[in-house]
Length: 366
Image (cartoon, rainbow, N blue to C red):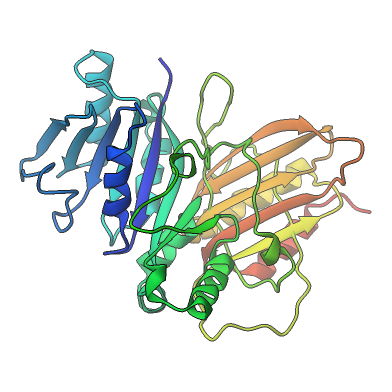
């Protein structure tokens, strides 16, 4: 049976997650969506949909969607839904998990890679983060959860942009791009957004294109770490979860020209891009990445790279979240294509100099 695509919807309290979700559920898309509310009761989807405080509550909605509230372990809820689907007791095509506004998305995502039973049933599609444009500057200054939610995102939606000036909006987008240069940013009005920008983004697909904001690439290297994780299996892809001692064969490396641009705030969640025009030595890179993940894994939110490795004519793609890392061979390098490794790291106070020097040391000598 095909894996169940899963979207994690996150964002700080009041950002508009529920508004976006209700639109998703009411859209005439013909899909049956199972919604898991990973809440503590402060912000349930809708009183008309969820009225219970019971431990396990699964409601079939009029449009065929399913809603359940987690009062216990996410893993148990996912197992229960998958089991009922296998037995024909519930019919749904995909899962959307709405996290509490105070949640760090990391443990939610790790559930899908650290538990074999869950990994055999589900595939993480992407992490969607909704950012309240009006209150984001203060929230990002004061709350690490808000910064982490930005760092984990595959797609960022800005809500309430009508309440701020164009200058304030530009400053916020600039800040978000330095925290996470790989997530597209789009303003949304009352949750109105095309479904193709929410579902099937394949943010955790190893072979998905590595997107780095082009404006960021020419900017100074603010940023420090990044976490990515992506391991799924389906009929076309092989993604595998690795621990710190696994074999990965990729990494991207990027150098930024420095110029005197500084922010008035110093976010602990930052990103940087590494580039290299020489290939990596696979053994050296594996050893270095294993050591780095062992030490800094909890602070590495997302990381991803497209790498040139000695010994293969194909691109190597790797990505990870915290201590979980995966790699895969991708398409061959084209004859007219520059062979440049690129990596993006998003994380919390990562030692950029150590990472750059270590990656440099893994390159094949000129």
